Image (cartoon, rainbow, N blue to C red; front, side):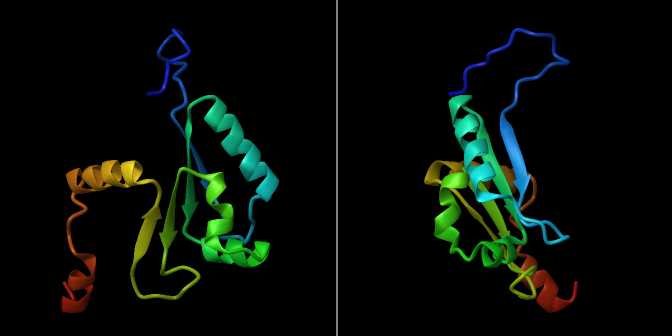
Length: 124
């Protein structure tokens, strides 16, 4: 459990998540050393790191790496199969079993149980 460090006023909230995008729509990618440094600082402060990996395959191509090679840089990462892989639909989230269980619950509570591919195939 994260320990709250501040007893400051509500206008100075504690950070619970660092959200990064890698690569961007302009083709820029984070330096791997910077990603690892961010993760290290986050761990020291008990803050999670999430990477929006919508274009992660483009970033991996730039690095010349495989997805497993950057797994030490984040707690969770989303991947979009429509960007970079040219799939008509799809995505995934990567993380620990604990993270995935929590995220599935949140997704369901927000209406994420709809089967999007059946909606696409029926033309609704």
